[in-house]
Image 1 (cartoon, rainbow, N blue to C red):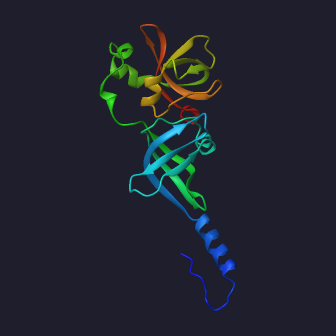
Image 2: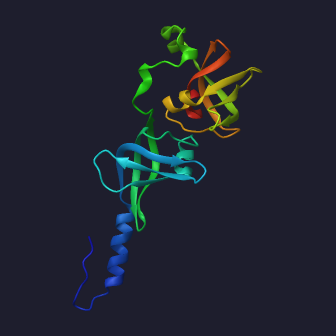
Image 3: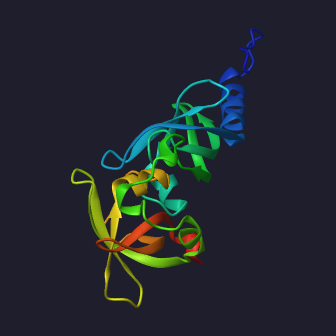
Length: 191
């Protein structure tokens, strides 16, 4: 850290140099999303090893290929200390929140887990999604059928919301009510 000289030296230049060095240092952090609000455009991550909350800006998340992330999702991020605190500069990995994965959704109970695991990821675009209603629809490229997306599937995939036109990679199965997404990923996962 910086210490001020008492010999009359130029402390402002030294302080500025040391702050610039601090701002250029990055660290890889593993933690959990405390909360993220796509409307506000930011949220916070809590590092597993403790420390101050880490700002996660929507632009950093978009660079990873997602517009939202679920509360409680595990993340690996690159961080940088600034004069306003610690901020994420890059998302390296997002893991779905831990918890009720063992409890299947009613619409998927009858499906063979091996068949679901073998379903390929398909590139799709969000038609619409209403977080308050808890569902929405996407279109797989080259296919006319809508694909139903339940909010619980989003949460289990590490997401909290979707925006119209957002590009995705989804694992689709034929369910009781038509084509349904079993898994939702960032677009890059389908490439």
